[in-house]
Amino acid sequence: MTDRTSIHGQWSSRLAFILAATGSAVGLGNIWKFPYITGENGGGAFVLVYLVCVVIVGIPIMMAEVLIGRRGRQSPINTMRLLAHEESRHGIWQIVGWSGMVAGFLIISFYSVIAGWALAYVFRTASGTFTGVTADGVSSIFSSLVSDPERLLAWHTIFMVMTTIVVSRGVRSGLEQAVRVLMPLLFMLLLVLVGYAMNTDKFDEGLAFLFSPNFSALTPGAVLTAMGHAFFTLSLGMGAIMIYGSYLPKSASITKTSVVVALMDTLVALLAGMAIFPIVFANGLEAGAGPGLIFQTLPLAFGHMPGGTLFGTLFFVLLVFAAWTSGISLLEPAVAWLVENQGVNRVRAATLMGILGWLFGIVTIMSFSSWAFEFDFAGETKRSGMFDILDILTANIMLPLGGLAMAVFAGWFMSRDSTMDELGMGDSLVFRGWFFLVRYVTPVAVIVVFLQLLGVIDF
Ligand code: PHE
Image (cartoon, rainbow, N blue to C red; front, side, top):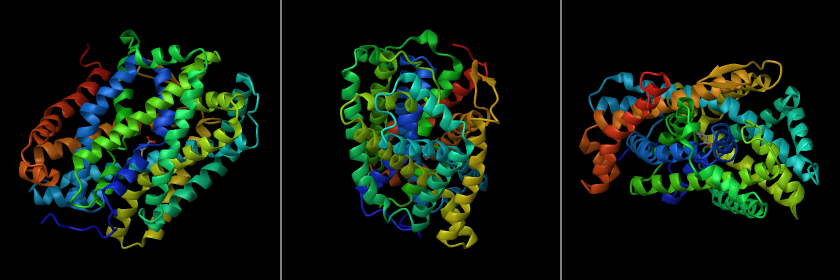
């Protein structure tokens, strides 16, 4: 019964899955988003909450998501429907697949715009624009880019086309090879940047900002953002990891692969933070600068280090690749569903989703210039209107709710035998630990975070 195969193919090995899932997880979330939300939320305490969420919420849900995917071997919508049926549960569970598809579509629409910034920066860095530049200079280069909708549209279009092409060819061909080379390279470049940051006289201050928690700075909104980010950065709660799990060979260990992916993802984020904050402090920049943070700090480092033009160009190229391998996984669940249910071929399905994501991306583009508006969310002033709303709606609300539903489904609605069979570790201590986490700890943690935001409970 569980030896199904996916009509969309299978990874060539366990390593291929690890690479693909890491490719999905490591992206703009780690290098662009993690530093800027850490800066906005006061540093250490926020980082600590995020790390705790990765361990007690992220890893158990990742295991649940992979196991559901591998058992069903279809797009998230059909997998949820099939498993609900097999476990004699209500068909309403497929709503998890639907909401994931919508979340993926909303995320790709703004993700692609930010990836477009990174693309633009490849060329800016390569042409030596940042050589010897001042902090003010870097800021004005950034502002002139984001306030120019036409340029943003061009880069967004290029990124969307790149993503659609890979998805239309099937995630296996190309993706596996690319990730195998690019991920280690990205890692090495981050180490170079951390090395540079160590040589600024503010390295200690940067580390202290990241790692010494000051709980008085922690607002309810920050706690939700930290938890939401654990979902976002691990690609959880919308079906990306579920569909990648559906291509995982039966023999691979779900526990080991999930832990490896989560570890690598976390390491990349922390390295990015360790590279960026010393540069921020050494140049008297604002840690809470918002979404432009890395685009206003890293060019300063590249502009002043030996070989900076080369390193900088390579860095932004790798950032684009990291975003690319994540963007692909955002579209894949919807494309797989269109192929399965609507009888559309993969190329058409990918094109259709690509065009939709592209069109919707215009909302984000305009939100940085003429459509910008301010609003308050959980005690913080947000400046870029629809971009912030999309970000909060997806990362802080839809992904945690999707992940919660997956945990509850795996922990309470699938039989213990089914999950034990799929995890393949027998009734071991690790299995029991996981089972306890998804049944009690993870759902309670997610619900508590929502309730404290709504002011229902207060710590
Ligand atoms: N994890 C990706 C990142 O950190 C973003 C992502 C979210 C990808 C959800 C897929 C699903 O950049």
